[in-house]
Image 1 (cartoon, rainbow, N blue to C red):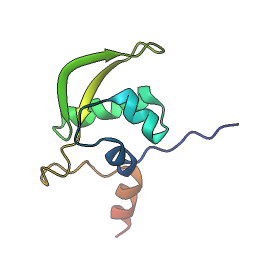
Image 2: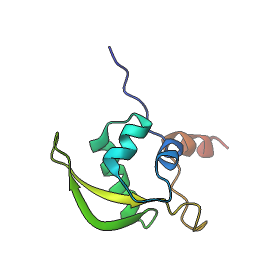
Image 3: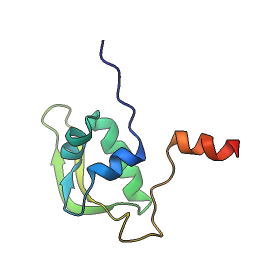
Image 4: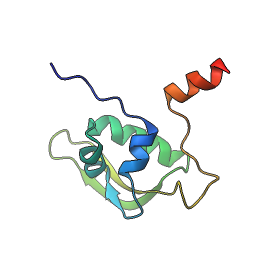
Length: 94
């Protein structure tokens, strides 16, 4: 029985580097479910937290459209990825 790997923003940050990467590749790198990751990334892109390229990829398996994304995190300290659920809980406890 495989446990579903919890995706944290830290993992996503590690997976996205300064080159353009399709979400699928990032998912493979961090061992995540890519359709879930693609949704997270498109939300992050909508918030202006990751940069999106104009190219689209279709996943041959699930047909999800992927955006290539580039890490913006370090270049723009203003755009930190929002805290994941765990960090939110920690913040609320304080």
